Image (cartoon, rainbow, N blue to C red; front, side, top):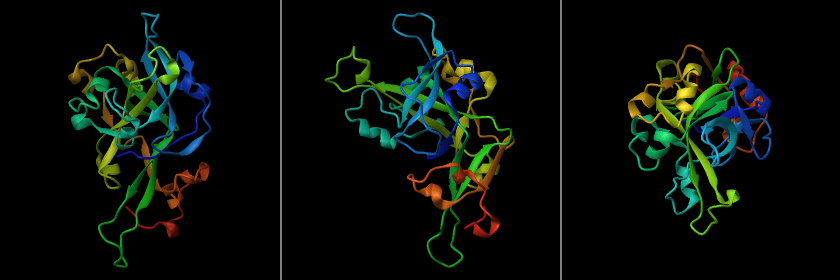
Length: 251
């Protein structure tokens, strides 16, 4: 799964890197090195406004934890932070978004926790967090799905009544990162960004072909402090490599 990541780039940086045409964010987010579910995050999506025919690539704020349009209570989003690639095209919660509402979620890197099969001391195994990022310094373009939701008694013409949420797609981890955790977020290669974001791309087979696992080639993984375990902790020190003597359990 993917339950935490780091995002420190400014809207200006993301506009340049992801070739964004419009910035539609209500507020600028502070750099966040411990992004967790339920937080608002930056996302890139291609969508036309009501009075337009041509969709534009825009930068928006979405809430992490997808709330399907048919949900009665938005708290369901707490259980919808990830969507498994193997079932996303069929599951009622995700299939409509998988067909037409796909986004890119930019991240500096993401965290996964390695759990040994047994503890050296015989007690409960202690999880070691790892930080995984690109070696070339570029953002990860995580594959996401987004959805719109509003209360049944809300004014449909009031933009403020809508909640826009997202989930991250995951799959079986490749060998190099699979030693840390058996699931990994999916990424979209730059050459596939336009097709992934295009709401006109609806064929499930074509959509599947745009997805790639977090390939081991351009990525680096190293252990970091367990301070990241607490969502209240933040700051660039969370992504600093942990000294070898402080590593709980090497993967």
